[in-house]
Image (tube, rainbow, N blue to C red; front, side, top):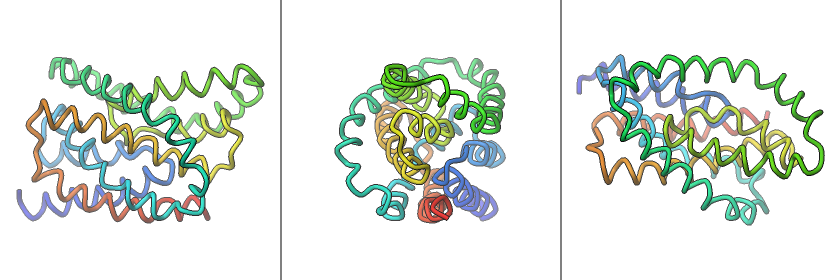
Length: 225
């Protein structure tokens, strides 16, 4: 790896870590940076997923005020999240590389459009999902998000804060903190699949992971403000 590639990936990891832990779509930064560094689409997706295990400690430390008393809730949803993410990772590995290259632009477009539409969708769902509908919305939404994340990675969980605000009636900063923890559980599960069944490019993972670790410390503080 050249010094230019190292700087590119570590800088992209920092920016993506800030954006992802603050409630945005980190894949819009990390994935193009890995392509620019010369990785093919499948390797870029897997490398980004493995690198984004790193922000977990930083996000947890920075989100301690919001996570106080929330660990029983997280334990309840940890196993379904991990199982769904592992299934999504398996789906990615059996997808032909050519098919992934064709679908990636649509996944990126969906991530960008969903991020733009999130405030309006959140308000609409809040009006349409009282009582029992909310109880169905949360497990269904988290299960779908876990499979999607295993396939496309933790960096795209822009939808979770709105889902958690509707399903749990928690404040926005606390929902963002929980959003940071659940995808990390999902990421560990999908990365275990990748490490076991794929040759991970650790030279590309290392600089992006270092940058995203620092970014994960910064993002929750921005959300709190």
